[in-house]
Image 1 (cartoon, rainbow, N blue to C red):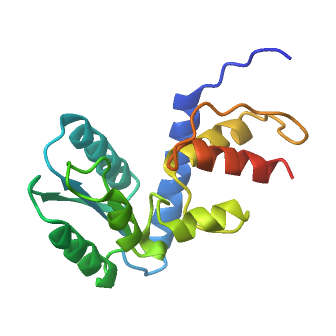
Image 2 (cartoon, one colour; image 1 turned 30 degrees about the vertical axis):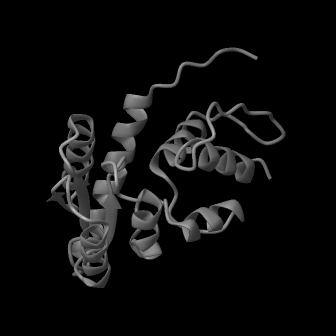
Length: 184
């Protein structure tokens, strides 16, 4: 029962290098460059920084990342129409809607509108349902990062107890579900 310091920066670097090799191989086989469309509604500075990091990370591994800026005073119908147009676009492989959305916009409706097969955040109920049954689907990034840190650090979770602080649908619950799946 010793404490272990995990070098998250080194693990993240290794993951980025692996992903870049995968994308390079994908492109070398004649396939099209993957495209991530990130929707940012409003002008929340923290959301702007976060989404810029996501798009930059995608670009650094060879994925075409784009930010779609939308006015903070758009109507729900306009946001839904934009998501549906990205769902229908065969050139778009992944969609994320940066949360939180401005007041007056329903996040659940927005997340449920994203096609589950393009839902890179893993927030659609279909992906969360797949996660709850230990099935394949998109997994929220923070939960996946926690699992990768544990796996790549050689920490054995089988038969162990884990405490997850928080119960949000986007971090706490998915992290607990992933740890549960790894413990079987």
